[in-house]
Amino acid sequence: MSKIDSTDPAPALFEARHKVFPKAVDGTYRRLKWAVMIVALGIYYATPWIRWDRGTYAPDQAVLVDIAHRRFYMFSIEIWPHEFYYVAGLLIMAGIGLFLVTSAVGRAWCGYACPQTVWTDLFVHVERFIDGDRNAQIKLQRAPWGPGKLARRVLKHAIWLTISILTGGAWIFYFADAPGLLRDLLHGSAPVVAYATIGVLTATTYIFGGLLREQVCIYMCPWPRIQAAMVDEKSLVVTYKHWRGEPRTRGLKRSTVAAQGQPLPAATGDADLAAIFGLKTRPDGSLNAGDCIDCNACVAVCPTGIDIREGSQLGCITCGLCIDACDKVMDQLERPKRLIGYTTVLDAKLAQEGGVPQPAVKRLLRPRTLIYFLLWAGIGLAMLLVLGQRSRIDISVIQDRNPISVRLSDGAVRNSYTIGIRNMESRPRPMEVAIAGPGNAVLWGEQGSRETAATSIQVEAPADSVTKIRLFVAVPSEGAAREDLRFTLRALDEEGGSDSSISAIERPGGQP
Image (cartoon, rainbow, N blue to C red):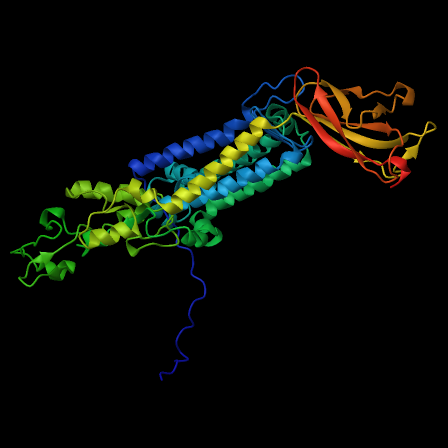
């Protein structure tokens, strides 16, 4: 058994951060990231300013979370507090959608549409615009402080802070009328909570998107650790095809490298290529080289600084920038593209064994993804169906418990109720509250009396509000002392709208 030398340095428990300077690249996936970033930022910043006419009695902001009046508006849809199940349904759809995307194409959400990725990408472009590309940034990082470096740093962080302030400001516009809140913010008369929210979101955006960047994805985000349960051997993930790229030629020019699987005669007049470049030789002395020339272009463009050639890793966000960088090198070497590409583990095994990979579409259409899609679509369709059939009138009935009932002078039994009529339209609506039940039951309101009782009364329901009225219901005292007679109160819109009803219980004989 070997002994531990007490003079050996203690192992480090923390590794200092190696700052990542992503190199600019152009290609299919970089353009896709540009498109997603522009659309996502455009939706986020512009949505609160879109107007939507809902009439005189409702706000005209297309998307508004009106906490003060407990409403959620999204274009023509209006959600009330008792309809929170729609929000729960949207959250469930978002979760299932994330499972669907991950099982199909790995961490594509992380690589393209995650807010951390979108804002980090924006901050990286700002940094590249001011400091230059990768080599210039590294050089500036190592350079001593001077007027030039200080000016660049001040300008860069000023722009980052501006973006962060705009991000925090855009968020609070979803919770109040955007033009009015902006005016109050500029005049200093907005609520304190508005300034506090902007401050918190500004700080988080600046720190996460500008300072921490890839550290959030690698160390703080739980999704890389959860996604392992969502990905299987048929999921499309960014893969380095080592069976084609190895052995690497370590910078050897393509003009002197054999095509994949073909021998390269030993060069004459120069030092032994095998010794210089560490290449493997065949029994006949010829060299066997893969397509990878170890240029590290895939590493230089990675926003998290990983080497995709080392296999699937926690830091890979499946953004595809390494694919664009490698394709560019393969073009220069006149070799087939997609040495790095979206590939399933199963197809990788087939290709390594000389088999023919299946089309990507066929890989996507498998039981796991179909089940996720059917669940996602089913919940969405169910919500649309319920939303299309929901009533814009709602009525609730609560029986007064003290006293439960009162016997009138003519022997009838009277019960009292508190009626809540919810008008979920942005206009006042005249309602008729009618009783349907025992043929001799009558009702009246607080302004009426037993003599003016009838089978219905008229009520004016204000727009977007709940109207509460006290109602009295009387029936003759007939039957057993504890007999329960059910009746229905109905709220009907006389203008041809919808109606709603609820059953209540009348207890004759004055019994509880």
